[in-house]
Image (cartoon, rainbow, N blue to C red):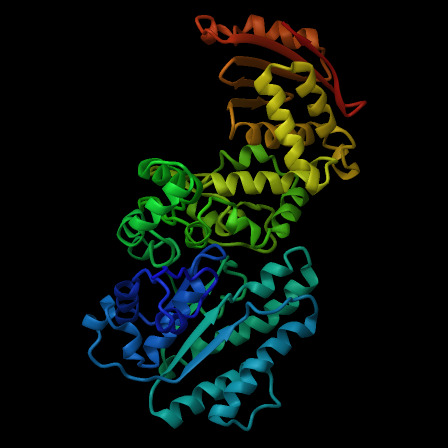
Length: 515
């Protein structure tokens, strides 16, 4: 029988009843339920948060039959049924002050139908308060509250301070109800992509245990190396045959493309479940996670804060920064980290510094390709071809060809970036060479006003020096003075040194010299 992959299916009951494969997370869910009552979990999109919420819902509905053959079956003895309030904010576009009220109203009306309430003309938080009370009084059991994508309205309005303020003023007292109703609540879990900070929607709800970076729950969403082996060995074999690879090559490629998310400094890497399941379902590798939605809000942030992309890929930061997004802050890093475009790559215990980087090839390539049209005059449709032509020129030793392409990447610098021309040219070079680096080898160093770069292919080594408002001659001289090419003198490949000058007046490369 053909294996069914639950790509995009987030309903636990459907997965179990219709025979889709399910990676058993129920032992962790049991631990979660038995050791605490208020939780918050942040994970990137498409990482299994909604499925986790749905699994908890089935558990609290007492649907024992759905857990047959899973760890939970041997752990849970009671299978009690609780009243459940499940709020999912994922389903709509938040672009007006009314849209959030309408979405809350939709859920509140459904609950009022079930539990009856005379307060339907009051503010959302008052209605919520009375619904919790009525549910408890009618069933005699405390209430379970599950909130999926609690931050969707906030995320969609990152560039709109007015709506952010409106939504914050609505959500803060609404979520705050849970604190005042503590005696009526059995369990609560809020999930989302980001953690909006202390001043934000959670300030009235300070009894939430944040398990986003908790070592005990690092693998509550996503797929571990062990789970991949235990659940998908046959699938890896089939994928290997489909792509003319050995079993080991396929494992390596899956790891390179989809593994590498670290939600704690000590935890092993996690695979992106959406990409892995899509790869098995379709029998080929792809940028599946990227194709399902692209983070325009991230580009807005990067441009707004005149961010140096080179720094992004070598970022060092503290847990305070990773932990929360302060809407007033100018640092785009927490949003980029929490959204899953950067992850923890290293940790320095004293002074407790995290080193960040791209989790894997899918994310790196997808993110850079996505950025390219925002920083260069290329349309989205052309940018992939342009990079590929650039790499072909690099591989075939056509220096004038790839330098002319580089000029076209730098042409028409957007006016708002022209004031900071040096940062702009560094960002464009970073995107182009980092993308080229996925197919060749690039060592890229930057310091004030210049970049030096070594680009290696099977046949050539290019040692490049970029100057801003100097001369190409000075750049070549610097390569010689500093002996940048020295490590390659015994190399059998052909070595080129290239001095490049960038003019802030013409806002482009004005000359290059090749030796």
